[in-house]
Length: 498
Image (cartoon, rainbow, N blue to C red; front, top):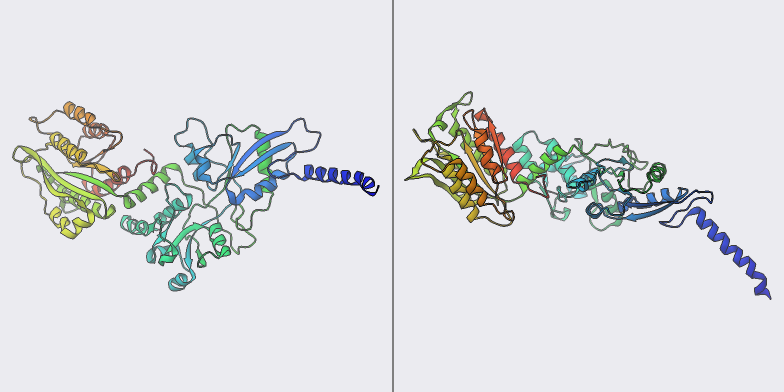
C-alpha cells in the first residue's frame, strides 16, 4: 500500500528529470522549446581541446540538434563528408583541405580562440641562456625540435619565425638547419609547440617542466577558425552557434581571439597565417635545406663564359662557379651532387666531360671538390654544345635515378645551342619526352646567365621534363637565381605546391 502511494511521486520525479534534461540538453543532442517550427540538424567537427566550449555553446541553442565531434584537424582535412561546421586548430588546415578540391571550401573563418606558438626550453636550459631570453638566442644556441612544417601549423609557424629573424641567406640556412623533426628537450634542445600544449605538458608532469619563450617577431598563432562548409544543412543555425560560442568561456589554457587571457599578464597580438604564396616560399626554403636530393649539374664552359661581369671583377665563369659552390652549402650534406662541363668537342667528339663524380656533399667537402670546382676556366673559342650535353646528362641521371631522393638535372648556360653537327631541338625534346616516367620524376632546371641566353629554348627543354627555366640579364644575380631554382625543384608534393 505504501509502494502504491509512492508510484505517482516516482513517475512525477522521472518526468521532471526528463523535462530538465530536455531544457538543459544532453551531450551532442540539443532541442529547443516546443514552439519551434522545426528542429535544425548540425554536425560540428572541432579540435579536441576546444570541444568542451563548443558543447556548452550548443546547449544554449534553441530549435537545433547539434552533434559535436572532437577530431584531430589533420584527419578531418582528409575527409569532410557529413561535416557542416569545422573548427580546426589553424587556418592552415582550411587551406590544406581546399588544395586540389574542385568545390569552394572556405580558406578563412572567424577565429574563436587563440594559442601562440612558443619554444619550450627546460628550466635548466633557460637558466643557461639567461632570462628573459628570445627566439633569436634559442635558435643561435640550441637545436629545436618541431613537427613537420609541411603538415603541421606549429612547424610552419616555427619556420616562419626563423625566416623572419634571419638577416640573409647564409643566416637563414643556419637557422633552418637548427630546426629538426624528432629532437626533444631530453637531448638538451628546445621544442616548438603551442602555448596550450606547453601548459598541458607542465600540468600533466610527464617530463621536465618547460619555460615558454615567446616569439620576438610576428609568428602566426593557432587561430581556431569557425568555418561553415558549403554542404552545411542550416547556415542560420551555424551562425547562431558561432554567436553562442563567442560568448562561452574558453578552456583554461586557451586565449581569446584577441590574445587576451585572465591567467596571462600580457596580451599576445594575433598574427594571421601568411598568404599561400608566402607559405609556399617558406616551405620551399625548408625543403631545400632539409631534404636530400641527387643533383646532376651541367656547367657551360664555352668561350663566352669568359666575358667580364661589370662591377664584380669576375667573369661569367667565376660567378657561375661561385653560385655552384654556394649550392653545396644550401643543400643538406646527404644530398648527392655530380658536375659535368660542356662546350663543343670537349672530350674528343663529345661536347661534355665529367668534372666531379656523384657523391654526397659531405664527401665532396672532405675530398676538396670545391677547390677543383674553382679551377674551372672557360674554353677559348669553345662553342655551346647544349643539346647533345643536356641529352647525355639527362640519360645518365635517368639511368642512375635514386628512390628516396629528389632527383634533379641543373643546366647553367650563358648562350644557346651552337653545334649544328649535333642533335636538333625537335629531336632533343622528343628524346626527353620518351625518357619520362611519372613514377620517377626527373625535372630539368635550366638557368640562363646574361642577355644572350635563349629563354624560349631553355623553357622548352625544362618543360619537357616537368621542370622550370630561369634567366637573369645580370650574371652577378646567378647565385640568387640558383638558390630560388633549387628551392623550387627540391620541393615536391605533398610538401610544396607543384
